[in-house]
Image (spheres, each protein chain N blue to C red):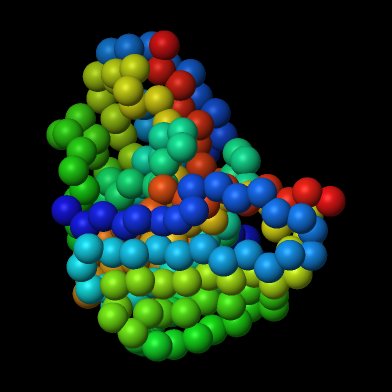
Length: 113
Length: 110
């Protein structure tokens, strides 16, 4: 069975630009969560979606937004990119999102110059 | 917000040795998860714990959910070179988001 997939793998953007990252969850999973991981740190929660509804939001500015589609795939959007947004962006899927195990994709490495 | 303290930050061990690492929280959790992350990849789930005192094994890995519900432990027995990587603990209370530790970087010397 296919795991969580993310695209693109790598991305280089300039300050001020906008970026869209994509995630497809494991088949049958209805919840998607997004995390930001900077070098030397653990993943930090950004958003969780379940059945297309936002279930939770971490301590990130409004420049970050996300949505989930009817097929449970998800997009993370970041506007007005800053150098500090450079990180590995991870998507995790789970069946319900209410306390069950989360399975991560390989991530998208975003570099902002 | 909730903080997880994971220790040690890094460890260098000889192949064949056992490894222990732990994670503590400032608040009570009802779920503990342990992940391993290799360079350039996403974290891979190793063990999930849902009950205080629970002891769960996955091959050479054993993890425990602490009785106080504020800590968890991961042990690796008879380490091998492919155990190299960064191990993360993660916990949550109720339906709150997962909170991760900063990781333990494991290096195995053959």
